[in-house]
Length: 225
Image (cartoon, rainbow, N blue to C red; front, side, top):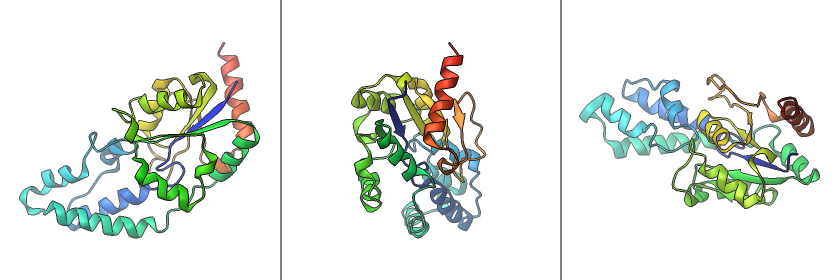
């Protein structure tokens, strides 16, 4: 029986990831360097420990880059692109339906709370969630399962009683390792990533009713027994 939903934030609730990639790519191009999506994918949904676009540009152009100037260029472009970032289609409907179904709702993000909170306030999302688990509280972010294990603990449910919603490979791997039912909802940046062994992949939350999604997942779970 499904008792809880756990949502990622960046790229899943609000697509902050696609603008980030495009901002980095634009600055890279100013230095005559292309930034492949496949390479950038390593840091999507996790920390820059897995791929650092700042150190990579320095490796590509050696001493010809002023990193402080590079960062300022990125921040300016990213801030401009983020002005267009909105809640992804279907998210509000899922959050409202979850409350109607008496499901607990958690957020598990590799970002810090001071990044997430302004968006939650701006879009009036905070009250939909029963718990928040962020990078501030764990030693290891995604793809390590620690954030999801913490979220399960806060929500008081077992892994098999929860559904994770993710858009990235690193997030999916974290949820899978923690034992949750896994639903992939790719965004513009991650739609071509090679996901495998997930429970369900949907193009948008606006295209699949939450109750129907739960029925599909619980049906798959029963048939696997």
